Amino acid sequence: MTAHDPIDLRGQEQAKAEVEQKVKLRREQEIADFKLLMSFPWGRRFVWRLLASAGVFRSGFDPSPTQHAFYAGERNQGLRVLHEVNAVTPELYERMVKENA
Image 1 (tube, one colour):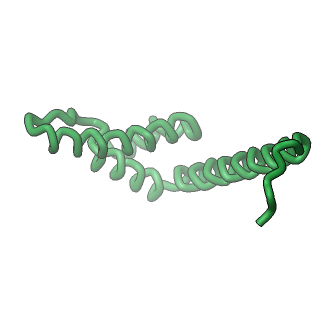
Image 2: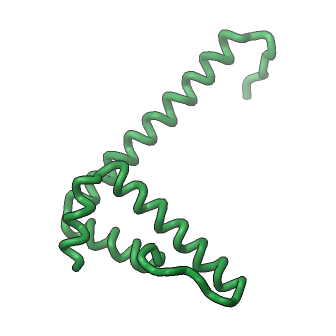
Image 3: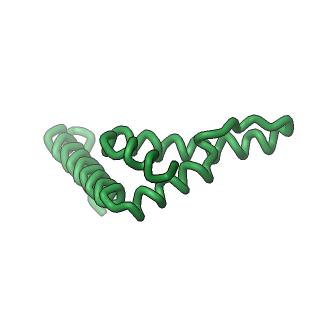
């Protein structure tokens, strides 16, 4: 463990740059993984089932507050996946919809 030196601004900047580089590389790997997944019909079927089971295409309303909260949490995760589809592989969304119609 290294001691933190509050006066070492150059070291702090270097540490920050290293963390930012790691985050950037991790995101690039996530994008590459997602593109690979969506490039195959089985991958698009998997993503479609995930979106459907998360309730992205239906209302999450339920009169019970606890059940409603549960559905909202499920749908939120599905919306994150849908956002990833549209951000990383927007050209494949329409194909995925047609394949699963």
